[in-house]
Each structure stands twice: as C-alpha cells, then as structure tokens.
Figure 1 (cartoon, one colour):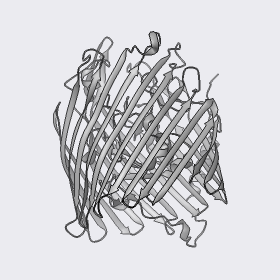
Figure 2: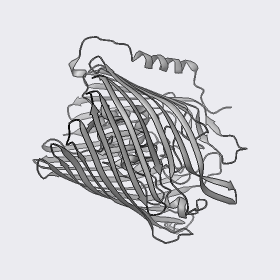
Figure 3: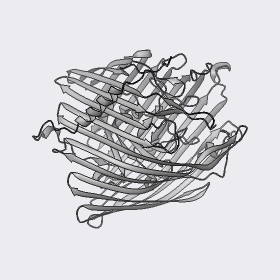
Figure 4: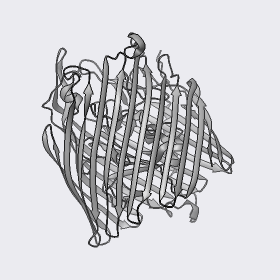
Length: 628
C-alpha cells in the first residue's frame, strides 16, 4: 500500500480559483488605512533605492509576515512569500548537516549539496562556512529579524561568489524609539518541541542596543532525531552625527542534533555538535549626494561529528575549525541629476583546519579581492538604465569578470517593466579542491551562469492590489560534478543546465482587517534536480477581528525529486504531489500580551522532502509573547 496520501484534483482547482479570486475588486472606494508605502530595497544596489528602479527581481518579507507564518526558523517562511524558492527540511525543528542534512536552498532550480549557490547575508555580510562553503540554516533565528530581502537571480556583480543563483539578506532588528523595550516568549508543542525567547531593546538619544537569547529543542519526529540550540545575539549602534552611524554586533549559536539515518536503511545513529559565531563592525555614511559604508566581518565555527561508539562521545572521526573574514567598502555618488554610480571593493579570506586526509591538520586559506562599479541613469523621467562590472581575483584560480545590465521602464506611477541580463558564478570550495569527498581536484574552476529575465510589476486601487510576473531563462556551465564510477571517481567542471521558468506573486489588502497573498512558480528543467519542484503554489490569508488574528496558509508542491542517482540506470525518485495547510490564531487580551496556537500540516499529509526522512503529520504548538 502506498504510504502517501493522494491529493484530490479538486484541491488544486480550489487553490487555482482562490488565487484567481484575489484579482476581484471587493471594494472600489479608497481605504486610507490599507495603503502600502513604496518598498525600499537595500540589497538591490547596497544603498536604499526604490524597488521600481532595481532591474533584478527582488522580494521583501517583513517581521510581521515571519511571525504570522508560525515558523521557528527564517528559511521555511521564505517558501510562503517568495516564488521560485524551495527549502529542504527533515525535522520539526533543526535542519542538521551530514547524513540526511538539509537546510539546502534551491532558487529557480539551482542548488547543490551542500548548498553553495545561494548566498545568505546577515546585514549585508556573507555567512558561509569557510571549508564547505555553505550557510548553516539552524543559526538563523526568526526573533532577531527585522525583515528579509531576496534577490531572485544572479547578484554576483555586487556580492561575488556564491550569489550565483541569488541572495537572501537577513536584516536584524534594532531599537528605533527612545526608551526600553522587553519581549519574553515561550511555546510548547508536539514532539516535546519547546522555544524560549527573550529580547531587550534600548535607545537613548544617539545610542541604541538590542540583545536577544533563544533556546529551541525537540525530541524529533522519530527515535534519535532530537535537536537543541542556544543562540545569543547583541547589536549596538551609535549615531556619531547626522552623517555617520557606527554599528557593531556579535552572535554565537551552539547546537546539537541527532540523526538516525533514512528509514529505508538500517538505523545508523549520527550526532553533530556545532558552534557558530559572527561579529561585525560597520561605519555608514550618508550625505546629500553620497552615501556608503565600510564593513568588517568575521565568521567562525567548530564542528564535531563524534562517533557514538567511542568513549565520552568526544573522540571525533571528524573535527574542523573554520573562519570567513572580510572587508567591504562601497560608496554611491549622486553628483548628476538622475544618475548614481556605486564603486566598491571587497576583500575576503576563508578557510580552516580539518583532521581528515589528505589535508589533515593543515591550515588552508583562500583569498578573494574584487573591485566593481554599478551605475544607473534615469532618462525621460520613465526609463532607467543600469549596468555594472565586477573583477574578482581568487588566489587559487585567478581572475573572473562579471558583467550585468538592465532596464526598467515606468510608463505610469503604478506600472513597472523590467529586463536584465546578469552573470553569476561560484568559486570551488576547499572541500571540493582538497578533501576526499569523494576525491579532491585542485584544478577546479568556477561554476558560471547567465540569467535572462523580464518582469511586470503592477499595483491597482491605491496599492490595495499588487502583483509581479517574471519570466526567466538561466543557462549554467562549468558545473562541478563527480564523474566516473566507483572506485575511480573525479570532480570535474563538466556539468551544465538550462532552466526556464515563470514566477507570479500577488497581494490584496481588502481593508485593515483582511488581506490575501499568493505566489506561484513553474520550473522547466533540462535534467532532474533534487529539491526543485516543477510547480509550487502558496496562498495565504490574514484576518483581524478586535483582539483576535487568524492566519492561514497552504502550499501545493508538484513533481519534487528527492533522489537522483549518479548511475543513469537507476531511476530518479519523485515525491507524490502534496498539499500542506497551516493555521495560526492569536489573541491579545492585553496590549502587552499575545497568546497563540498554531497547527501545521492540518491535512495530515505523509510526505518527504529529503529521501528517507518522512516529515511529521499534524502537529501543534502554542505559547505566549509579552512585550513591555
């Protein structure tokens, strides 16, 4: 008997008409309290600029939307609000690494294992592990987030390697108003899942501070899949004068996860013990005709993958320490009317030490130095031309040239048309170059891709209704893949892809109490890719009534590959289509107190995102937040 629940066809029909109904105008009068302010995007050009002038596809998620999603981690919330993104999971809390590792991000079908094609930033600083080159999803705590900005498509012109498929910039909270603000929260749910948060914000005149501590834990959805994490974050800002702002932050996360292996194989308990930290110092300037920043950052970590059969669980067959440090300097000049030029330079050094042959206990580092320029010129009040060029030098393979060009056209104040051509690239990681995973190749070159896209953005009825439609074509070459057959294997730059797709997102605000959102993505792949569904549809609704708030979301996923063998004689495994329904209801009996209950997978779908790792059926959690 098939263990998966089949999705009735009428479910998809209902979702289709629900999405279509968002286009219907329920009210023709202007509702002042539903008017949205024009979006401001930082990641589009490193300085604040209207989304309408950025030729790339950019999405933004607010802290309120993240809270309403009911997700404890940031990345799963992206699925609900951003088209073209898919995040893999294997547990109710905790992504993990190693066997059955997840937290991989696929953007427009471009991904790898581990994920190195989508660059994660925190406040504009790169956040990837120095040896393996991937971000660690468990370290991103939702309670520290002000908003998230996503560039869908290559952003290597501004951010270099790993921004080949796109960028996720997590912008952390800071205290805006004078005084002291405290937030305390806790929740408990299925599988003994617990979350505790505490934050303190303080501001007095020119000095501001934000501090948070978090603890998450769960017993997991099956034996030996427990997870726990402790996370601390602090951020201090000082306004030197009206033109200069100084910001410093520090973050430390320690988590431990157990993995029992895939269910289709004998149980193989596996434990990870990871510490990750980051610190940064930024000096930002803003003048009438110029603005920019100088930023220093340092990421560090230690990874233990102990063997549970050894004494004290601390004798490790794998141990690594790593770092990723850098300097970012950029300045935007607006010396002429309707013109801006951004000039910048980046220096980065990353690497570490592992206790594995053939580089056992050897410190390996790679340096990257880049210079770039990005210019925009507005013509005839409606047309904006954009172009940029980046030259990056890598101490291992040499130079890489990255061009980008784009056009935005605003025929009216509510209509925007965009088109762009951009190049993305990814440098080979230290693991790929020097480690037995399965074989090193120090002669590897960067992966490359060219992305072509065109977009239409429209807002109607005093911004009550807005939508974005994008079509793209992404062509990749020089992809690093494992060739040959065991035991003769080798990593080579012989892979390629040709992905095409359509993305659609919409939002309708009926009034201050009721709003809808939806996004849809269709992906056409020339070859199967794990964790890149052909179709994905997300719809959501939020309703407020007096002290109560209700948030409902649904996700439909079609043709998701969960396993692809390097042996062409073994057929890929496709997950049966599934539909997830989630809901969160909250009440505010007091201004300072919020009580909430959230239910996930309310249709009790049986599904897998990672092959051999079933996701939970119906599960609930409830809790409170106190703010004063």
